[in-house]
Image 1 (cartoon, rainbow, N blue to C red):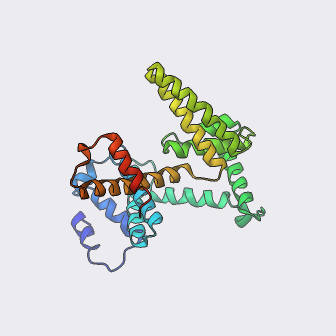
Image 2 (cartoon, helix red, strand yellow):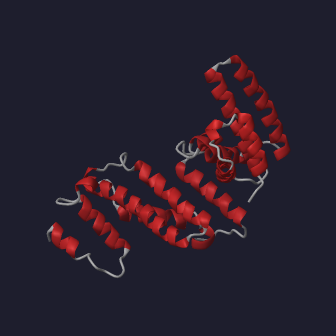
Image 3 (cartoon, helix red, strand yellow):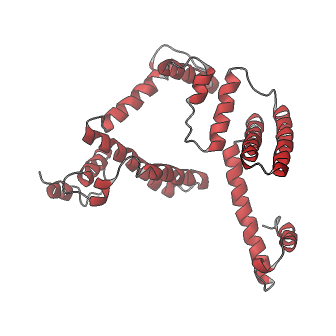
Length: 271
C-alpha cells in the first residue's frame, strides 16, 4: 500500500487509537512522508519532550483538564516519535517500550502481582526502591546518588539526592538543623562576594542553594514548587508596581531603585 493510500485511510475518523498514532508517525517518517519529520533525530527534538512535559504539568497545576488532555497527547507523541526512530534502525519499537514498562510495574508491585505484602504507601516505596536497586545492581549509596538523572531541574535533583542520602543515615536531624547550614553558607557567599572570585562565588552559591533545598525537604516543602510559586508571586507584584507607576504618569525606567522599592512595598500586599 502506498504512503498516500495509508494516509487517506486515517482521514476523518471520529476517534483514534494508540495504534493509529503509531501508524501516523510511521507515515510521516516513511518514504514520501513529511520532510520535517523525516529530518528529526533524538537530539533535535530532545527539547520538545521536556517542553511538552512541562505544558502537561501546567494543566495539572491550573486544574485545566482540557489543557492536560491535549498536552498528554503531545507527550505521547514525543514517546512515539523517539520509538519510531529506533524501530527504523532495528533497535527497539513502541511495543518494546510498553513491554518494558509493563514488566517493570508487575515486578515492582509484588504485593499485587505476587505474594509480597505492603499495607502503606511507605512500604510500597521502600519495596520499589529495593527492587529497583536490585535490578540496576546498585549496591552503594554513591551508585544510587549517581543514578539520579543529571538532566533533572537542579532543585529537584538536589531534593532527590537528599532523600537518597537520608536512607543511608546521612542527613540533618531536622529542618532547624538544616537551616543552620543556610546561615553558614550565607556567610561564605558574603565572603566570596568581597573576594571577587567568580568560580569560588559560584561554588558557594551552589552550596547555599543545596542548604535551602535540604531545609525545604526536611520541612516538608517541595523546593521546586516553592520557587515556581515565588516566581508567579513576583510577576503579580511587578504587574501591580508597573500599574501604579503608569497610573502616576511615569515609566519605571524614570524612577530610581529607591523610588521603585518604595512603590513595591506599597503594592506587594495588594490583591
